[in-house]
Image (cartoon, rainbow, N blue to C red; front, side, top):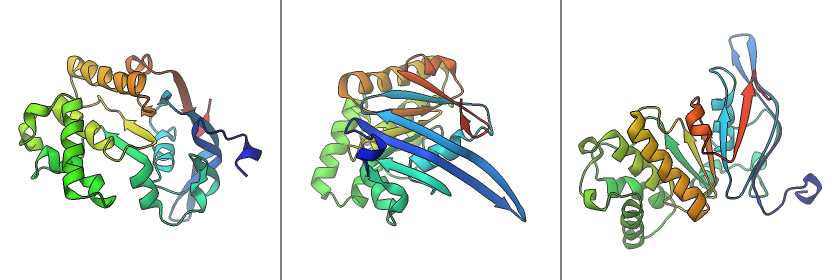
Length: 229
């Protein structure tokens, strides 16, 4: 089936004819209207569009947080739209970086990075070693005992990046990753994402309104009124 759709081993994601609507009362509101999208391994793609364009809904589907009404979604050649255990697929293959960081406040940053690995069944020793290694990679080796509320916004976003990398995902989705940061700190985070992409081959889809962010990406995809322009 994958070969018939021209999906190659270099394609991390392939969305074909994706449709999604929401029902409020008796009214049906179509959000995505036949979206087709392909992302190559090692690509850094910017997904842009105005509020209400459908980009957040598309992000949720690509990140296996939501299901489609119609169409097919392949993640590394696997037809995700036919799978029942989406949480397992999401934990194994997808990483997320959120605008609001989404860290657990009352545990250390090492423990925060360990969380995805707990659900993946990785042993205590191995997940702690990997969490420390990732935090050192993002420049937080001196902060290992700190909790998120003891860090700056930029440092918290670095923790979120380390956590997104925890299970070595096939793709990372970044939703307005610099939205809560000042411009200088935001540039530092963008440099880190760019380094992970260019030097370590991490595949990113970055949802953003910021043209500055889009300039570091390999490709820009714009969505308007539920369709790819």
